Image (cartoon, rainbow, N blue to C red; front, top):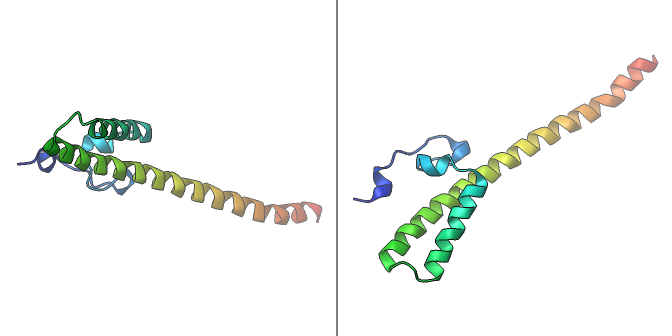
Length: 100
């Protein structure tokens, strides 16, 4: 039985739904570094075919983690930007009221 199938997974979409906890806990930078290491090992032929497939599978999970972190960051930027737009839109009203 595959090791990945025995691992519990997270259900938190912000950390990448369905990821093993050790990957879900990674920062973006940690996931990218781990992904780069996998790519290097596969490209240099350091591992056999079966191990390459297992590493590729892990790489897909790491990529999902990176995408989840980027998606969460994009959402935060949108929310902050929307808040700033609303604040700026309300500002002229506040200036008009102070003149009256």
